[in-house]
Length: 244
View 1 (cartoon, one colour):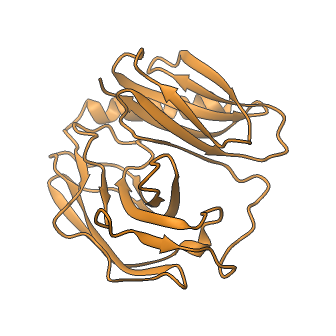
View 2 (cartoon, rainbow, N blue to C red):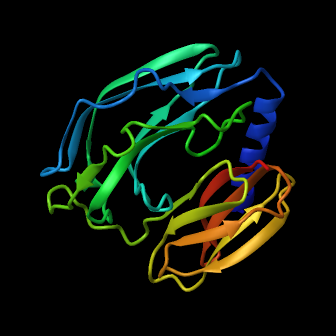
Protein backbone atom coordinates (compact mmCIF):
# COMPACT_ATOMS: atom_id res chain seq x y z
CA UNK A 1 0.00 0.00 0.00
CA UNK A 2 1.21 3.49 -0.78
CA UNK A 3 1.20 4.75 2.81
CA UNK A 4 3.44 1.93 4.08
CA UNK A 5 5.85 2.43 1.16
CA UNK A 6 6.05 6.13 1.93
CA UNK A 7 6.59 5.52 5.63
CA UNK A 8 9.30 2.98 4.87
CA UNK A 9 10.99 5.52 2.62
CA UNK A 10 11.03 8.10 5.45
CA UNK A 11 12.41 5.56 7.91
CA UNK A 12 15.16 4.46 5.55
CA UNK A 13 16.04 8.07 4.78
CA UNK A 14 16.30 8.90 8.47
CA UNK A 15 18.54 5.90 9.10
CA UNK A 16 20.80 6.77 6.19
CA UNK A 17 21.22 10.36 7.36
CA UNK A 18 22.02 9.51 10.97
CA UNK A 19 24.53 6.81 10.09
CA UNK A 20 26.71 9.20 8.09
CA UNK A 21 28.19 12.63 8.77
CA UNK A 22 26.58 15.32 10.89
CA UNK A 23 24.07 17.74 9.33
CA UNK A 24 22.80 20.97 10.89
CA UNK A 25 20.61 23.11 8.63
CA UNK A 26 19.77 26.61 9.86
CA UNK A 27 18.55 30.02 8.75
CA UNK A 28 21.22 32.66 9.39
CA UNK A 29 20.18 35.66 11.49
CA UNK A 30 22.77 38.14 10.21
CA UNK A 31 21.52 38.82 6.68
CA UNK A 32 17.75 38.36 6.54
CA UNK A 33 14.80 40.59 5.74
CA UNK A 34 12.97 42.23 2.83
CA UNK A 35 13.11 45.44 0.81
CA UNK A 36 9.48 46.61 0.53
CA UNK A 37 5.91 45.59 1.29
CA UNK A 38 2.78 47.18 -0.23
CA UNK A 39 -0.33 46.48 1.90
CA UNK A 40 -2.72 47.60 -0.84
CA UNK A 41 -1.47 44.85 -3.18
CA UNK A 42 -0.34 42.23 -0.66
CA UNK A 43 3.02 41.95 -2.45
CA UNK A 44 6.36 41.82 -0.63
CA UNK A 45 9.56 42.23 -2.66
CA UNK A 46 13.27 41.72 -2.15
CA UNK A 47 12.96 38.97 0.46
CA UNK A 48 16.40 37.62 1.36
CA UNK A 49 17.99 35.19 3.82
CA UNK A 50 20.92 32.80 4.22
CA UNK A 51 20.58 29.02 4.45
CA UNK A 52 23.38 27.38 6.43
CA UNK A 53 24.63 23.85 6.86
CA UNK A 54 26.76 24.00 10.01
CA UNK A 55 27.55 20.30 9.89
CA UNK A 56 30.27 18.57 7.90
CA UNK A 57 27.86 16.23 6.10
CA UNK A 58 25.96 16.94 2.89
CA UNK A 59 22.17 17.20 3.13
CA UNK A 60 19.95 15.65 0.49
CA UNK A 61 16.87 17.29 -1.00
CA UNK A 62 14.69 19.38 1.29
CA UNK A 63 12.22 22.26 1.14
CA UNK A 64 12.33 25.84 2.42
CA UNK A 65 8.94 27.40 3.19
CA UNK A 66 7.85 30.92 4.09
CA UNK A 67 4.80 31.60 6.25
CA UNK A 68 2.62 34.44 7.41
CA UNK A 69 2.22 33.92 11.15
CA UNK A 70 -0.34 35.56 13.43
CA UNK A 71 1.82 37.00 16.27
CA UNK A 72 -1.08 36.64 18.71
CA UNK A 73 -1.85 33.02 17.82
CA UNK A 74 1.07 31.01 16.48
CA UNK A 75 -1.22 28.18 15.36
CA UNK A 76 -2.61 30.51 12.67
CA UNK A 77 0.06 30.29 10.00
CA UNK A 78 -0.22 30.26 6.23
CA UNK A 79 2.39 29.01 3.77
CA UNK A 80 2.93 31.69 1.12
CA UNK A 81 6.07 30.54 -0.70
CA UNK A 82 8.12 27.39 -1.17
CA UNK A 83 11.60 26.60 -2.49
CA UNK A 84 12.67 23.07 -3.39
CA UNK A 85 16.38 22.58 -2.71
CA UNK A 86 18.23 19.68 -4.35
CA UNK A 87 20.75 19.52 -1.51
CA UNK A 88 23.40 21.46 0.40
CA UNK A 89 26.99 20.50 1.11
CA UNK A 90 28.53 20.56 4.57
CA UNK A 91 29.92 23.74 6.15
CA UNK A 92 28.26 25.91 3.52
CA UNK A 93 26.13 29.03 3.13
CA UNK A 94 23.60 29.61 0.34
CA UNK A 95 22.13 33.08 -0.21
CA UNK A 96 18.54 33.53 -1.33
CA UNK A 97 17.75 37.04 -2.59
CA UNK A 98 15.23 39.11 -4.56
CA UNK A 99 12.26 36.88 -3.75
CA UNK A 100 8.84 38.37 -4.55
CA UNK A 101 5.73 36.96 -2.85
CA UNK A 102 2.10 37.84 -3.61
CA UNK A 103 0.12 36.89 -0.51
CA UNK A 104 -3.08 36.92 -2.60
CA UNK A 105 -1.87 33.76 -4.34
CA UNK A 106 -2.50 31.86 -1.09
CA UNK A 107 -6.21 31.40 -0.50
CA UNK A 108 -7.79 31.50 2.94
CA UNK A 109 -5.61 34.15 4.63
CA UNK A 110 -7.90 36.43 6.66
CA UNK A 111 -7.33 40.14 7.12
CA UNK A 112 -4.91 40.92 9.93
CA UNK A 113 -1.37 41.68 11.02
CA UNK A 114 1.30 39.03 10.44
CA UNK A 115 4.98 38.30 10.76
CA UNK A 116 6.93 36.64 7.93
CA UNK A 117 8.73 33.44 8.94
CA UNK A 118 11.14 31.28 6.94
CA UNK A 119 11.63 27.59 7.78
CA UNK A 120 14.35 25.34 6.38
CA UNK A 121 13.66 21.61 5.94
CA UNK A 122 9.99 22.36 6.58
CA UNK A 123 8.98 18.74 5.90
CA UNK A 124 11.61 17.41 8.32
CA UNK A 125 13.12 14.93 5.88
CA UNK A 126 16.69 15.61 7.06
CA UNK A 127 17.93 14.22 10.39
CA UNK A 128 19.90 17.01 12.07
CA UNK A 129 22.03 17.45 15.16
CA UNK A 130 20.02 20.57 16.04
CA UNK A 131 16.36 20.93 15.05
CA UNK A 132 15.86 24.15 17.03
CA UNK A 133 17.49 26.60 14.58
CA UNK A 134 15.44 25.80 11.47
CA UNK A 135 13.18 28.86 11.52
CA UNK A 136 13.65 32.63 11.67
CA UNK A 137 11.31 35.63 11.54
CA UNK A 138 12.18 37.97 8.67
CA UNK A 139 10.10 40.77 10.20
CA UNK A 140 11.02 42.26 13.56
CA UNK A 141 8.69 42.02 16.53
CA UNK A 142 6.06 44.79 16.40
CA UNK A 143 6.83 45.54 12.74
CA UNK A 144 3.94 43.46 11.43
CA UNK A 145 2.70 43.18 7.85
CA UNK A 146 -0.92 44.32 7.50
CA UNK A 147 -2.77 42.17 5.00
CA UNK A 148 -6.23 42.59 3.47
CA UNK A 149 -7.25 40.01 0.84
CA UNK A 150 -8.05 41.21 -2.66
CA UNK A 151 -9.56 39.33 -5.57
CA UNK A 152 -6.35 39.61 -7.60
CA UNK A 153 -4.42 36.37 -7.85
CA UNK A 154 -6.70 34.26 -5.65
CA UNK A 155 -7.32 30.80 -7.01
CA UNK A 156 -10.33 28.75 -6.02
CA UNK A 157 -9.30 25.78 -3.89
CA UNK A 158 -9.27 22.49 -5.76
CA UNK A 159 -11.67 19.83 -4.52
CA UNK A 160 -8.82 17.39 -3.83
CA UNK A 161 -6.47 19.94 -2.24
CA UNK A 162 -4.83 18.82 1.00
CA UNK A 163 -2.43 20.37 3.49
CA UNK A 164 -0.68 19.12 6.62
CA UNK A 165 1.73 20.86 9.01
CA UNK A 166 2.41 21.33 12.71
CA UNK A 167 3.88 24.06 14.90
CA UNK A 168 6.02 24.14 16.93
CA UNK A 169 8.29 21.39 15.66
CA UNK A 170 10.28 20.16 17.58
CA UNK A 171 7.67 20.02 20.35
CA UNK A 172 8.18 19.66 24.11
CA UNK A 173 4.63 19.92 25.46
CA UNK A 174 1.88 20.75 22.94
CA UNK A 175 1.80 21.28 19.19
CA UNK A 176 -0.95 22.34 16.81
CA UNK A 177 -1.45 20.24 13.69
CA UNK A 178 -3.00 22.23 10.84
CA UNK A 179 -4.72 20.32 8.05
CA UNK A 180 -6.99 20.75 5.06
CA UNK A 181 -8.83 18.23 2.88
CA UNK A 182 -11.87 17.77 0.67
CA UNK A 183 -14.99 18.82 2.58
CA UNK A 184 -16.99 16.05 0.85
CA UNK A 185 -14.92 13.33 2.48
CA UNK A 186 -16.67 10.91 4.84
CA UNK A 187 -13.95 9.96 7.35
CA UNK A 188 -10.62 11.53 8.24
CA UNK A 189 -7.98 11.08 10.92
CA UNK A 190 -4.49 12.10 12.02
CA UNK A 191 -2.40 8.98 12.64
CA UNK A 192 0.93 9.16 14.51
CA UNK A 193 3.63 6.48 14.17
CA UNK A 194 6.88 5.88 16.01
CA UNK A 195 10.16 4.98 14.29
CA UNK A 196 9.28 1.26 14.22
CA UNK A 197 6.09 2.00 12.27
CA UNK A 198 3.76 1.22 15.19
CA UNK A 199 0.67 3.42 15.55
CA UNK A 200 0.99 5.58 18.66
CA UNK A 201 -2.20 7.59 18.30
CA UNK A 202 -5.11 7.80 15.85
CA UNK A 203 -7.40 10.83 16.17
CA UNK A 204 -10.62 11.35 14.20
CA UNK A 205 -10.92 14.83 12.67
CA UNK A 206 -13.41 16.80 10.59
CA UNK A 207 -13.24 19.80 8.29
CA UNK A 208 -14.87 22.29 10.66
CA UNK A 209 -11.78 23.25 12.68
CA UNK A 210 -8.86 22.49 10.31
CA UNK A 211 -6.50 22.29 13.27
CA UNK A 212 -5.86 19.96 16.19
CA UNK A 213 -3.94 20.73 19.37
CA UNK A 214 -2.20 17.69 20.84
CA UNK A 215 -0.25 17.12 24.02
CA UNK A 216 3.06 15.27 23.70
CA UNK A 217 4.01 15.33 27.39
CA UNK A 218 3.58 11.55 27.67
CA UNK A 219 5.56 10.81 24.49
CA UNK A 220 9.15 9.69 24.73
CA UNK A 221 11.68 12.07 23.19
CA UNK A 222 12.46 11.08 19.62
CA UNK A 223 11.29 11.17 16.02
CA UNK A 224 7.72 10.41 14.99
CA UNK A 225 5.75 10.52 11.76
CA UNK A 226 2.14 11.57 11.30
CA UNK A 227 -0.26 11.13 8.41
CA UNK A 228 -3.44 12.76 7.16
CA UNK A 229 -5.73 9.85 6.26
CA UNK A 230 -8.99 10.59 4.42
CA UNK A 231 -11.43 7.87 3.38
CA UNK A 232 -8.70 5.26 3.83
CA UNK A 233 -6.10 7.08 1.71
CA UNK A 234 -2.93 8.78 2.95
CA UNK A 235 -2.94 12.34 1.58
CA UNK A 236 0.14 13.66 3.37
CA UNK A 237 2.96 12.54 5.66
CA UNK A 238 5.13 14.69 7.92
CA UNK A 239 7.83 14.19 10.53
CA UNK A 240 7.82 15.69 14.01
CA UNK A 241 10.43 15.67 16.76
CA UNK A 242 9.57 15.39 20.45
CA UNK A 243 12.27 16.93 22.64
CA UNK A 244 11.59 17.13 26.38
